[in-house]
Length: 271
Image (cartoon, rainbow, N blue to C red):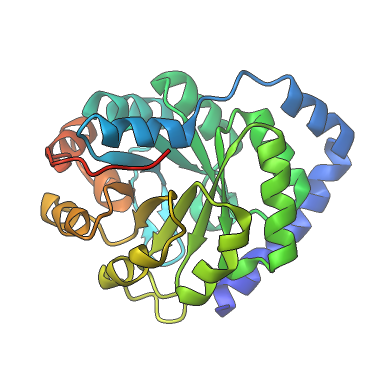
């Protein structure tokens, strides 16, 4: 795990403990259980592909450690509605504040404005965050295998599913892909970004996708910006994508989203 990831996780641990002093575990769990009903994240993607469309998880991200500020004119409800108008299937919302300039309220705002299922994009390392995610209205949580051991991944995934949320397992290599197999993943995110060099290579998805557990929906992450990129991944059997930076930089987000989504021949996806 790179130095930046180690620092992020250390800061996240401190952040969680500060949160606990304000809202206890029992309080956040109660809030999770009384939150608005979950919308099916995986089901939405599956339905989109079965209907002959790409499954797009459009990301609301203001900044990142590697790119700095991505979008200055940043209003989550407006962006969420633009994504929905452009044909996005689901949303991903960054809630990490120190490194991505995210905020919890961005998730609520985006979900309310779009009516789409939402992934909470953050560094999940503690059960508190799982309950907190559902309390915020998240329909899906991200588990990054590069920062979790097998026991932690199982514990967090079980808790998320217990609150009716979907789980997106993010992997970067064959080893991480093998580790998630016992967790019965419905959603597998293959990140094309090398965590050591931060270089992006779409071939990562082409190599790893055939190794994904049978029946799992594979989502290609990082390095996608053109219809040609999506066509290339579709040729490799991957028709769901998580895209943020290229759309966030567009002047007209709805139009850019619509132009990115081109028709294709839908493959069979098992239930």
